[in-house]
Length: 98
Image 1 (tube, helix red, strand yellow):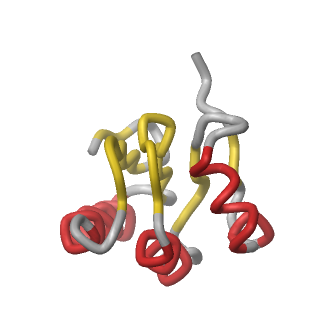
Image 2: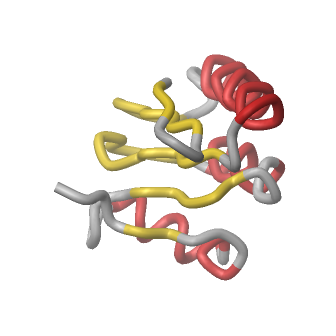
């Protein structure tokens, strides 16, 4: 996790699935507390995430009001899953900047 001027940035690598959802949720909770105390919102960077299942999408959905954006590689399986779930209608889904 890192911060910039107005956001808490949570960088996630690997897979978000039933085996790792506890760690992901704990990281989101920590980012939420940081964002609540002194930042404007959370950016979840999934650009290095290879897979996300419904448990990960559900965690993002539950935190949607605190999310400023979700970054993911365009045309990735993660981007496709977020679009199919409809999360892109509730949260800004964007490509990371180089």
